[in-house]
Structure formats: C-alpha cells, structure tokens
Image (cartoon, rainbow, N blue to C red):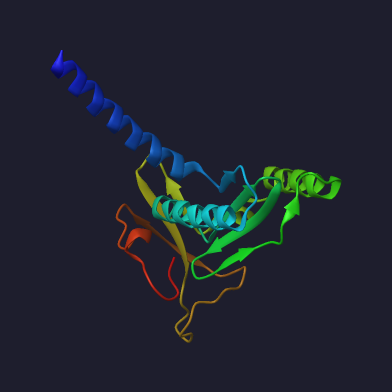
Length: 176
C-alpha cells in the first residue's frame, strides 16, 4: 500500500513537471484574473504576470516579447513584457460597450496576426523532432564590421541543442 501511494505521488509530481514545461513552451500570452478591482489586487496580478513571463522566456528562447492581460473585477489591462521593459495599457472597463469591444478586438487580433507580432523571433526556430534550435544569422561582408540587415542579406544557419544562459540566470539591468 505504501509503495503504491509513494509511486503514485512520484508519478503525479513528474507529470506536473512535464505539463508545466509543455505549457510554457506553447503559451503565447498570459492572463491573471482577480475577483476584486483594488489597487493591491492589480499589483498582485501584475507581479504574478512578471513571474509567469520569466517562465515563458526560460522555455521559449525565440521570444522577443510576451503578451499579458490582467483582469481585476471588470478592469482589464494589456501588457507587453520585453527583455528590458514592461508596457501596460490604461484600464478598460469590461462592463462598458467600449471595453467589451476592445477585448474582442484583442482576441481577434491575436487570432489572425503573424507570429512575430505575437512576440516570436522569426530567425530562431525550435525543431522539436531534432530536439534543437535553428538560428539564422546575417553573414558579415568582408568590408562590414556589423551584419547587414537588408532583406537580401545572406544568412548563415546554426543549430544548437544547448542553452548557454536562460532567463532564470539573468538578473539586473537590461535583462528579463
């Protein structure tokens, strides 16, 4: 009886770890909902989004920025979390026609927009079948000291199955 319970608990914990990893690998936006629209609840929701965003950056190495929403009572804010900045909109009142319209517009926008507008870097792709990342880097011309960012620039492609520095190791200025 004890062994079965212990085994079951270990499986459940392992399954949760797998589900957490898969979840953050696939999510493109975060939503934190609180029942009350107080300033302390808004701050708590915002703080929670910052923590969740760190998980996105840790699992998705092809992110330039991440989207987030806080909904506290009927007040909604839209947030964008970059590597060294956080932008937040003014409040939308979801009880009003305009607030509902803005929320629906956002959902439609997210449904139909290109991946780079969702925060993904098109030059970095995850190859799940191979278990690695494919990274396109502009080639340096002999006469240039920096890469050319022209559309016609030639690219070198690199493959990596190792993460050198992930988001959990980055602290301080100009980091996530």
